[in-house]
Length: 351
Picture 1 (cartoon, rainbow, N blue to C red):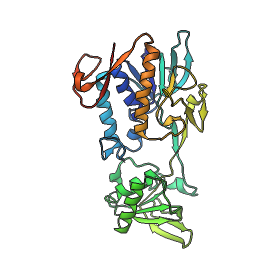
Picture 2: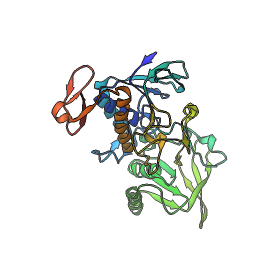
Picture 3: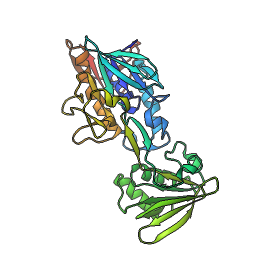
Picture 4: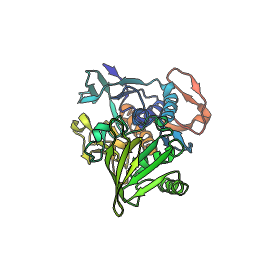
């Protein structure tokens, strides 16, 4: 039996940052994740994707963000159960929870923080009859290594942030980049839309709107795609790669059977106070939760983690209180007693 103060379900950026906030409160954490390494989607799906909305970083690769978070939490010595999925949860007479994985590993904690991101997921695929033939032979639903596309002809389909961001990123790597979208308007960030428009004017991106990819061709490897335009009809484009980025279809998996209040495949929480679920002692933070005004951003998950840890401390130590101090005075002290000086970070000193 693995025992800890806070059991975190999900080792993505929000789950990792929870370790830091809990560590400042001298609370021990253990993380469970179905992936074989920490970092969630940032490590598994798009480690080379640039992220632009992390405070203090004008641009940071997703994989580098994970590395920085792991370094940040290292002094607090978190435990990990990786490559296993949280399967069942049982509440004990003392108010604690026992969470068992699909491989039978048991964990006990007075507080459970669900930071599972989108949960288990699969890409949303376009309705093209022979698309399965070209999967791993020119068709990809995620981008792990941009160097695969160097000096290649790439067709990207989609209208959200991923499609826009990768079109911008690959404009300097691929020989040709086509961005195909069914509408004239995009769902992504305005800044990204403006960058794509500018790159289109400069001939770095071929922007095709009011259109969709309807056919794929090539004997064994993808060689061309058919694009059907609303007004101009069909045309063919030579392509080495087709990357449809229509998002992920999320599924909560076994967590959906834990008796939590669910709304649109997300866990409802009390955002007015501490991001608690309908079950006392269980919290949900990051993309896995929902509440009025919810923004599915990594920085939102960081904020939710900080607030949640304050509430978790009161659950674990109802007879204690804390006083706000700053690490510019006391540094960040890990469980091994060593201190690391840090600037502009808030630390809560327990009294």
